[in-house]
Length: 396
Ligand code: FDA
Image (tube, rainbow, N blue to C red):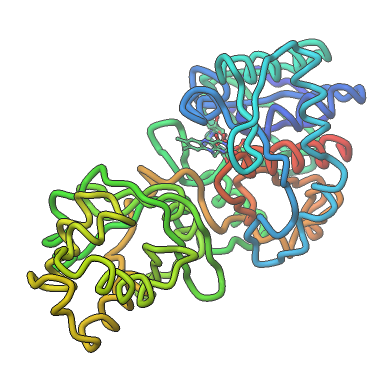
């Protein structure tokens, strides 16, 4: 270690993503000397690809019930102190044009790069040092926190873990946050991929072949949680917003219940059609409510090849059940390579909800996706990065 340069700061943030940059700029605004370290060659890589390149940076409907955590009240304090309006004030200060899409989702009109530039400008304005291409080799705490990279030793009385979860390794995810928590005795809730497509087993894939690309509005349920959004058939299984949302709540081996006719009474619809269109066949009838390609597959499977007039009641009940209560048993998910977020992480029960500092380790903070807080799809995960980063930044 001797021979390496040694620099001292008030706080060192590991991770130059959304949460790390927000922590740094907030602490910097209060006069702290802050260093942000990242092993990538560019800050905020996930910001850049988010929201299809337009960054869904927050959501008008941010509320504690839109976040999963083992301690579900944990998010309240940080969310109350940093609202979507607070982030919009920052966005407007930087003259970034934005728009609202469905379900309260707020996006840039132009590019996600504007959000990253905004955060970096705010950091630069208050003298935050951002060092890229820094591989963290070791962290020790003889007195101050010492962070050893392959080139230097940095030290500070406070360390902020902002290095995210395990999702999308090719963008720089490493699991360092969980390892450091373990090293300092802070518990971690087992991580799992979240907001991730499901894979289907062979039996389902057989009939679903040919449906790839078909999308429709559904209601999907897992336990007591349900979402009404679009479902998308893929080559390997199911995706689309409804599936991504429910995937964060799903546990291996559980079925997911899918209603392909949300808000309707399938049995009544089928009986009505038997009277109204007695000569029609199942495909033609189902395509009144479902995409044509899906109706072509499900019609003969559920209702056979006879005209509607010949459908007995005993055929209609299971057909309606299959349409409205489809028990889909995923064979798995597409894993961290495709997961937008990581469910689980540093246990919120070990952190202060006011400051994000570990109760048992002075000066050890954790923010953003590294923490066991997962938002719904739609700007909630960035909002957690902003709110938790802001809370930590105020405490540094
Ligand atoms: P994040 O992962 O962003 O940053 C962690 C940083 O730590 C990275 O820069 C990484 O390089 C660094 N790091 C990791 N290991 C390290 C190590 N060993 N040494 C040094 N540095 C290390 N959310 C949302 O609200 N709206 C959206 O539109 C989208 N869209 C979206 C699209 C896609 C494709 C993905 C994968 C994800 C989203 N998300 C999203 C989720 C959102 O991107 C995510 O919740 C935040 O980026 C989390 O921010 P963090 O700063 O906590 O982690």
